[in-house]
Amino acid sequence: MIIDCHTHLNRYTPDLPPTLAARHAALGAQMDAHGIEHALVLTSYTVNADRPSAEEILAQVADDPRISVIAGIDATRLDARQLDALRALLQAGRIRGLKLYPGYQWFELNTPELHPFYRLAGEFGVPVMIHTGDTYTHTARVRYTHPLAVDDVAVDFRGTTFVICHLGNPWMVDAMQVIYKNENVLGDICGLTLGEFQPRYERLALRMVDDVIAFINDPAKLMFGSDWPISDIASYLRFVDRLELTDEEREGLLWRNAARIFRLPVGEGAA
Ligand SMILES: [Zn+2]
Image (cartoon, rainbow, N blue to C red):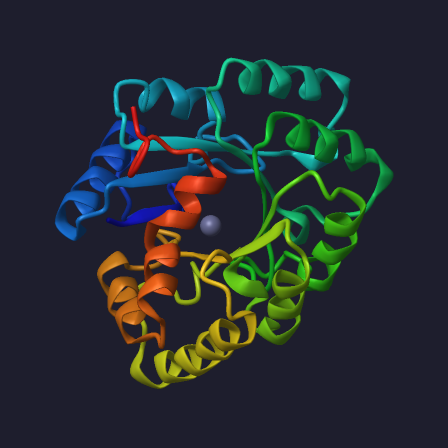
């Protein structure tokens, strides 16, 4: 069983299909080709012709039980109105998590304006995913993407679950300490490469992620995600094959942890 906890239906480059329906079909084909049972689709912090809103994605995947949606948050407009809209989506059970993009939007995670948002996530038991580490655009500021910043909010909001996306790459030493230390923090290993892994970089990434796995030493803390279409899923699954994982850690990484924290309808106890 495999759950991909981090994919997108944005049109990042002109070679991706122009319609949302075609990108959704492309994701489905990738899932079929690689035996992926369920995928989380994360929406952007902004909405434009290439980046559909959470509502648009929810409508697109409404009849697809293999897809769940994580709502990307525009943290620059997190006013009472947006919080009410999020509350309505959460109450209806339509979204499984929330995503923040501090490097792209230049904000501190522990800013007081975000505190009601973290409480809302805790109230509904949905994880807050946070982009950490390297960014896709040169206009992002990586000062805001350091994984240590997640420790602050994890300590202040113990009832909220946080996901350090991309393991803070390349600040994985910091990410692994924050994941290890906080019961309410997990990490996803996605998006460590653009497209396929190149051999020399893959060796480096394997060493770094193997260190994270050994240090954390807990099968309940890491999750597989690809970051498709930014990263190639086949190449990513080969990367996962090469990681030094116990059987229990591999199962936790590939699906069990995502199924648990996002409460996905898969595996044991599924309806
Ligand atoms: Zn991503």
